[in-house]
Length: 151
Image 1 (cartoon, helix red, strand yellow):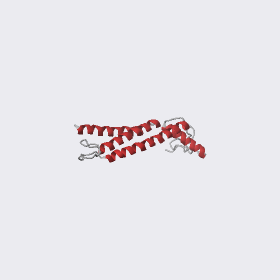
Image 2 (spheres, rainbow, N blue to C red; image 1 turned 30 degrees about the vertical axis):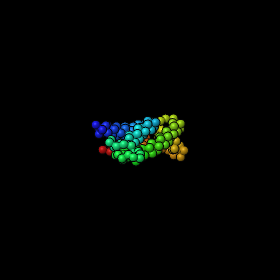
Image 3 (tube, one colour; image 1 turned 135 degrees about the vertical axis):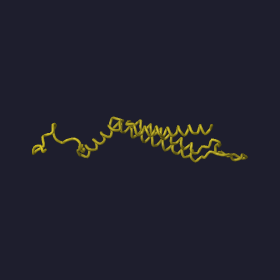
């Protein structure tokens, strides 16, 4: 019974990681990407806790006069506490950057913000953006080639 519950927890943790990574990869909205990062982080933390958990063990607290019983490994729990603190800092920084992007470029759409940022950089550097190699340089319709048609 406990192994089935453990399997459910492992599947849930892996599912959270997949949902988070999928949200980061597939979303164009910067705020949604930060939320997806938080979901992936929660899944990774759950995986770490599950890695050190033993279903037949007790908390690693020793008291006088007790025989030591099988105990849960406290190292993954300490790692998760550290990861939570670091994750909060990363999320705060990411949200600060999202707010700054919104203030500066007026959008949370990653592609629009990138285009506006590149246009601002080009204007500041006084350079013209590169032209597409697929777009003809001439007028439309294109003039006939000089020298006549070759068969």
